[in-house]
Length: 211
Image (tube, rainbow, N blue to C red; front, side, top):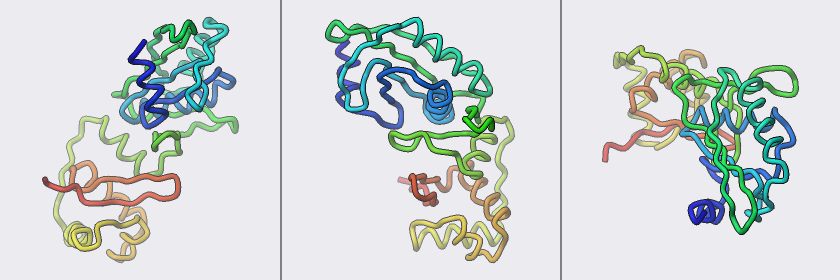
């Protein structure tokens, strides 16, 4: 119980989301998919956005909605782990979605299309093409063979001096098309040389420091 209170006190974030109640399979699938594509995460059902413990009214109904979302609104399907915790005499349903080995996972949206999501701070955001490619290749067994062409060298030298770059800037710097720039960035990310930084507004790339 104290552990849950501590989580609530810390607030929503990359691995934690509060839901007063489940109202939509689409929305809950989006959050669980974002957790599975990331480092995993917990949903606390019966907790309001501001951390107020409301408690779950119908535990069976909430479980049914979450299981339906995990099996029918997520692809590949997810297997959430349920736990019940009483906090101040109120029932909180804890739903754990571990990080997946089957990335990327997609959630079925209201428009009938399947989209991949990742977790950025306390929000589930649409995965960019580069993030999607990294997820696909990081869960496959193929190794990354980097041949240091002039392009890779130029990009890494630029990052040593300017600390960050976007895909548009990368394509302009190397005088190549966006798709080729994307491939180079994905290779360097998977090789652990650069990292992807996603905010709600933009995506940019920085060098992974050796320290």
